[in-house]
Length: 102
Image (cartoon, rainbow, N blue to C red; front, side, top):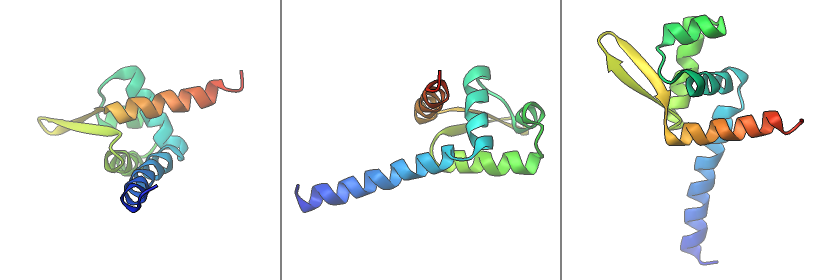
């Protein structure tokens, strides 16, 4: 393996670790699954579904956005959140792990 290949691999591994870290929290994993099921939701809708504080949900959404799994689209004063392609792949992985015990 060439040195340039190792450097590129390290960058890709850092990205993979960020994705796994984002999925490692049960609230964030639940947000991903909810968005996969519902499509687009705003923070208040997610808060009601999860029965969590709005500040907590907002922090988790920020982490998911940073990891590139969730995107936000402003509609008036609200932001509608939905999954990115990476977020959809993460949901598939989470669902596979959850179904693995069956």
